[in-house]
Length: 534
Image 1 (cartoon, rainbow, N blue to C red):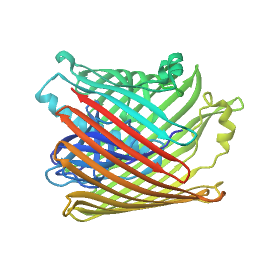
Image 2: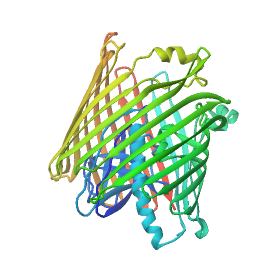
Image 3: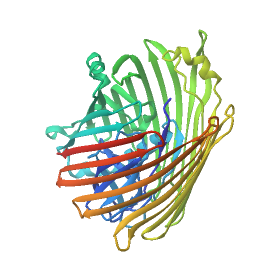
């Protein structure tokens, strides 16, 4: 039932190189990433998070300076200050493919599979040279979120602690382990945490992997499978085997609890998938995956479905991706029967017209996902909801090395909505303003729904105060919402200031302030983060 805004990226490459950085600051929808140098990084590029030796798309570059990037999140991954970020580039020709869509994890699934395949190719080649190399790395971070306001909500304080680790080929063996855990608490929710530790503790990844051969792996624990990521995390056992161009996998286990993300073994799930990959002489790929999944609640069928997805990069500069989910079971008023209903359809096309000019278009159609056991009291209402349709078109143009221009428009509608939702965005970005050597971005967003009309105008400046050590930025946003069925409007002036300090090679500290000023209330937010990597 959760929908995501996702960017998709793939590279056609001859030699894929990596550049490592880390998140230095997060403010609202902006994520700041620091590198030793932003050479080979361009506005509009996709940045990645390395998860289990696989690069997963996470951020899109909106602006940059000589060592820092201002980005926006493009996936549902939990990002925190200090997280390692990877930029990829190639020596010769590069094709970046991106699209922003509203669809149930379809784009997320596609992105994970693309990068898993690319990483599997790289890992297999590496293993031929160095077998079972021991590799352990991770991070520990401490974050503080403080809010001060004269609104009825008052002040707030939140702390968050995270621990992430990857241990590859432990002790030179074929066993690897990975984990990503966070614990957070507010100043007024200790009673809730004492009654249920999972109100504060979140285990996003906790798994052990055994690879008896380079073409087979067995996973035990909690992990999202990139081939079937739209079902979320799987708790228990997964297995996968590759035969040349064919991949076959299966899993059995449970789903995380839908209220607190704890382990809930009454939510049984099992299924399997088969995939075929084709690669032409130019190293461009096409992959088709088919999967079947059954999810239960206390032994009764909750949801049974199949899905198929396909991506194709065989034609130069052209990328096609599509996915569909099909419901195979329904239980209405005690009448159980098999069915064949499409619940999600997503199609995307992107074409790179010139090296500095690209366009993309997408279409999504979805209906409600119904869990007959978990959400019994909602079934009748969910069955009445109409399908939601959405379209999006995007264009990106880089007329000069330091200048980038882009725009997108979106449209979505439901038959019972009073009117469709329409939105549009345009930006101009220049990476090196003469005289001050700072990067600047100006953007405008227009939004119209059945209930409001809105305009958002923003200006952001960023600069390396001490190259390689201290980075700073300033932003201002003018937000004006006019409501359709109530009088007046909601006018906001929002400003934020950020400083990020690289104390040592693996230790960094960042602090930021964001002020939101309205007619009646003022909101002040302070965020601080200390991170160490190992």
